[in-house]
Length: 438
Image 1 (cartoon, helix red, strand yellow):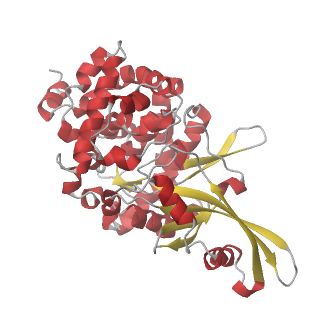
Image 2 (spheres, helix red, strand yellow; image 1 turned 90 degrees about the vertical axis):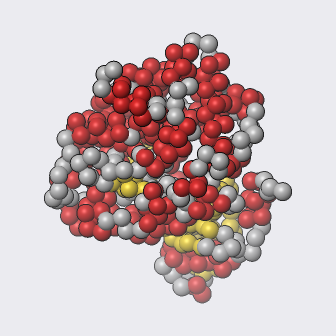
Image 3 (cartoon, helix red, strand yellow; image 1 turned 90 degrees about the horizontal axis):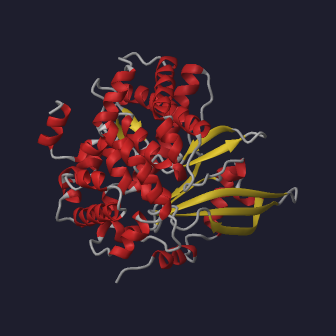
């Protein structure tokens, strides 16, 4: 019998894990004061994100109200608690928690240190990690960025041009620091190499993932056919190779042709970033969240994933090349600033990487794009989504035929086709013929 997400959340919130010891240790580390110098007066917990906003973990905001005993001063400590409650074995095999923990405890700090030591520039990539628990729940406690003036923007609307460029600038700085770290330390951890962490049986056609992805692909194809005016694109999608669809998660996690490797965020979409604006409501900073899917790759992986999923529908088409150029300028400038002493790619080489990672653009319209455009009241059970092949027409109508998604896809398909991205999932012999102009 499966346990519902709500039942898992209730069990977590009512567990002995979230006792005085847990919250006292947070205060102790956050404020750098001894345990016997304060008393917890109240702990307020609330969901940090809405339903259908995060599918692997539950995220809660905690306001810990304390009294400093000597001075009787009242203080409030604001943190975010992220707990992995999924029972799905594939998520555990993919090392989602160890990876994210390592990113927060080691990688992000090292990237920020690289920027400070080599340029004297203070660059922050994400919230500070305060505490990690592994038993009985896997929990990461970090700073609450909302309390620092950051906010999450509306995933269903998407980013405007200024917000997009700000996100691309921060991504370029992150990628550049990672290239410097890779030059020194290589892969660092096996779970940052997707070809190692995604074991072959996870992607076999007869595995739960394999069967589920085939049902997702078929449901998506039938939904596009049902639009009535997208048959040309549906015919192309109907020719996609199922093997490419399954293996795309590994095939896109490769360095650039020139050999440059960056640490891809791996899940760089609107709900995994928070923006801070000035008094004129202009964006001035953005920080990243949720590093559960990070792996070494070329920059094209994150660029496809981000632009496909998170930029306003009209803006991402009209400004696509402008955005790529902006990222390129920021990335190469950052590499120079950080004294990266290997080959710095040309703009053409970046476009080659986008071509090589085109399966991420194609795969994203099935997976992450529906998440950003999802506009129904019913919560999605992502464990069933990734493991069950028993999804009915009503389910696919909800995710692929709601007006928000349909409008976005209809505007994006012609652009993807023009760039050749829809052909990336074709069998290799057909893809080779297209590349040769046959």
